[in-house]
Amino acid sequence: MPLQSYICKECGEKFDLLLGVNQEKSEVKCRKCGSKRIERTFGAFSMGKSDNRGGSCATGTCPTCF
Image (cartoon, rainbow, N blue to C red; front, side):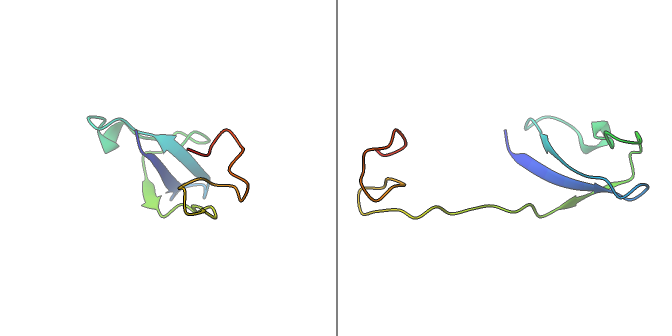
């Protein structure tokens, strides 16, 4: 499920939601005020430093390294 970022056009609340592939946008509403006047925005993301083995740490010893 992709994490999608939204902003409420009524109260300005910014929030992220995990939406299923089949979930309708009409079902989405602001968690603060309940408005359905929301707009999808671009969320921030990070690209971690990677070594030549595809891992995320320089030593290759952390649990996220493959």
